[in-house]
Image (cartoon, rainbow, N blue to C red; front, side, top):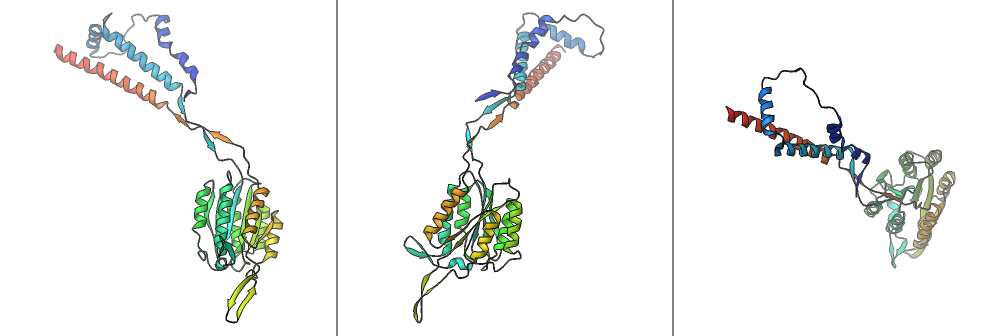
Length: 336
């Protein structure tokens, strides 16, 4: 839709006609500047622009057209595009996912078969990401080191793809929970207060890194980052060995006490995921704890168009002046 920011500018359209009709005609004055070929120009004007001549009328209409184009440019025309819904402003949600060597443990059941912990985490977390419409979602992967795989963004599809592409051991075989929290806090502290959420998922304890998890947690609490922690891994599985089958606890290394303290100090909650159903329920609970704000916003793209009538006015003025100059030159050469 075409729109004008200053439509009142069109009231200036009849100004040249009013000036011509109302202002007094100028009398004969002494010349302030002497031009050697002035008499030739005056003679040319009288011959080509005598009363009733078509050239004089055409030139007047052309000048009125130029004036109209200048007024149109002054009115600041713009084109309003179709309404575009903006992403609703929700929370800034950082997901920290453990990809250490222990995440390769096959103690989870997915579609009737045993799969590594990370495979199940990818599926459930991806479903969670796609539900967070309106949130800025970021992805942090950690093992021996912690890395930002995806910064906070509304592009949830890309975040999900980057999580799917994560491989066990990419960040090292050990687990650095403290470094992961510290890096997440560094990214989240630049975001608005009260919407800074970190969901940390791990299956072990802090065995690497230069930052103690509880020290990083104190920094998170001071910064206003709320941390929900998830301990993942079955508590019992059957292992077949040389002396037969035996039951073992594959999650013996999980430091639940530290994960509980991290959540408590930052106002979050600790969850224990022993199977796929537990993990799915946990993310549903987090959806309830951190509801998405659904205030819809509409944006209409605006494209300024003032340059079009302005350029047309300049081109017509240039062509008009050039035509008059050429005609004068040709007339002069013809007389000679």
